[in-house]
Picture 1 (cartoon, rainbow, N blue to C red):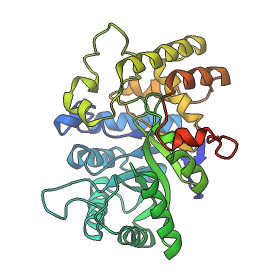
Picture 2: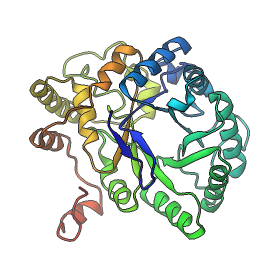
Picture 3: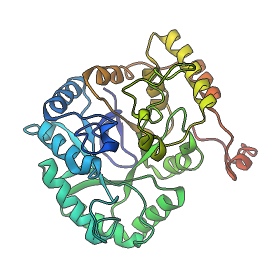
Picture 4: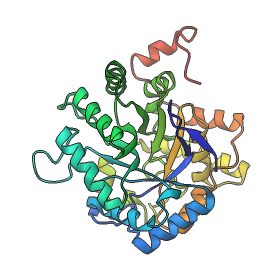
Length: 343
């Protein structure tokens, strides 16, 4: 397993991590992802460690905390062998302070996550989203205090816009507070918005991308093609899951899948393996989170590492998945001499 530096920190992480959204299945939404119990989750952790995948990503809202509890049981007795990342900020209760990134909510969220995970520290703690109602100074001072107290080793964010992230980094620099070293962002061959602003920012400010939903919200599994019904196990069978996730135009999806099929035939790999490998070659990407309903899916995802698409294959996938840029990015690309694309 290849390891990469996480942003501008000295922390090394594997290029793949296992997402635990499939652990528990405690709500209608997460049941569409998977429902691994402790026994199955423990087996998945075993397979990961055998392959050198040592990083596991969770969140306090995954199945209302069940995913963290199951992960805690699955890594019990081998905490020193794994990297644990989890997230907070989204609503985790009915009270007025059970949501957001206030000092009150973050401290309580971290304490509860530590208890569910059965550990006394979190390697990477990420804000699940931006809280526009809490001052950035309060957020970062709170996180800095937990880093200094040993409860968190590194901090990151997720689903921030460019200005959210840049303002946060500026506040950290101004006051000497802990700095975001990771941005957990949506990025895939059918979702390339990350490249417009967040990727150049990440490269300039040394913030490593931790990619969520790298298979386009379940669309790049190789089982979705023209004229074929959705597989019965697809998360896309749930309208609630479809509505809350990224939207993808149907013909665009088929065009990308056609290009993936061609690359898969040329490489002897599967469509998901090709899609993941393409991401691993993108600038700023430190880690890609893969999910797995079972051991078979996990082993297939592990096959995305240890080889590389050729430059020509990457070029074809880039062309098939290209979309018009939003302003001002299309305008800036017209002056590539002074605004070159990220590399």
